[in-house]
Length: 470
Ligand code: 5AD
Ligand code: SF4
View 1 (cartoon, rainbow, N blue to C red):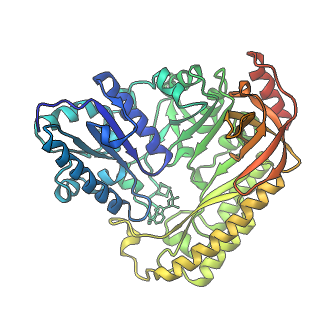
View 2 (view 1 turned 90 degrees about the horizontal axis):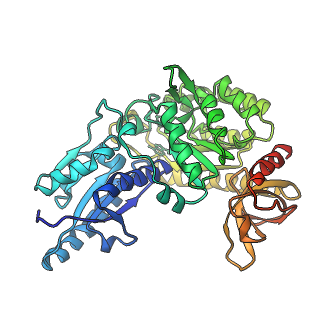
View 3 (view 1 turned 90 degrees about the vertical axis):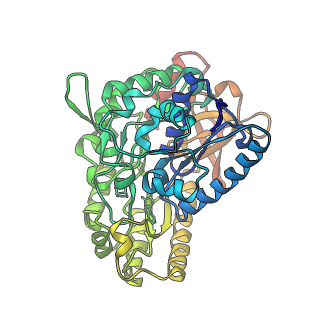
């Protein structure tokens, strides 16, 4: 390496919201060391690929991007400049040294547990070392990360992600998360509340709590007592300015009574829940090591609907898990209809090296997976459109987030995360107002403002009260 010190940072984020959050935290950790984010990769002195292992061909995409970065670095070096290249996230965690072997241009590889040590790792890479840091240290990475800075969070808008839990102990047989993100760790309650207060002061109105298995949250409070997600949500809902709370992703077995009571009692907890079942057949659920049957899942859904009758559900589905027959797949189609999902993410099973699924016999042919995915997507799209149509004529509380594309228009989100467009003044941005839904388009709703609360501090309370009546 040369003596040149990189100062411009570009982080390319792949995958889930957890990675979006992590990328922000990496930028926060590097800001005090003089790194400024830039919008274009070509402008950067340090490029970090924050990778995701969940999607198909994730590693291949990363390696082809690394090929382009190697070329960019060669151009730089021809002009007497340099470029530092880092790989973070789940591919880094899963592949470790293999990345540096296959892509020698990479200077540092680090896993999700070492973001707070980034400045130190970069310093080591500057000294010419190839740095591979993918251990799971015992120390608490959350404790070391700088709190989100106000000016940064402001730029991020009215909604923010907040990681409260990481890792997973469930070991579904298709999934790499327990290996790449390690076992479950929950952030202490006070730490979460502190970060949420910072976000609220910066103007954030809606929090989405993140965790690979977020409803297994069990953080310690100031007195050393273990607190579940329901109580955490209640504490967060008390923070002035925080009007909406969501959380993702959950495991059916961790829907505790305490959490369901929170859904019953907290207006701020939105009636839209992402609760994956993955497949409808008990045989496949067993092979997936999901630890629950279809009937167990349906019982959880019943409890949820009893606590919050207006709850809408979304989920994740995998088609073509090893051994899945046509009959098994029909059971998945049936569960989609029975639960009446308002939306869902669908995946073709793809092998993750090192997971039990990878070595199972009876891998399903690609053409079969494609066919099943198509049928599943058609069904889910039909249900999604039906759900959008079902809210036409209702008045929903909408968090106004931005000016619309046309002058005089504004846009926001319903409690069910639907995009809603309407005529209205931009001074309403940041408020939650009642909007009558007049039309359902393919991916959004058209609404009409019912009453407009004047923009004063009382409007927060007023709009929450309105939300309570809907
Ligand atoms: N193949 C296909 N989909 C997968 N997912 C996780 N691992 C795999 C895999 N090996 C899906 C699951 C999970 C979502 C985040 O990604 O549905 O809930
Ligand atoms: Fe992966 Fe979710 Fe299963 Fe954990 S619960 S192993 S994160 S699919």
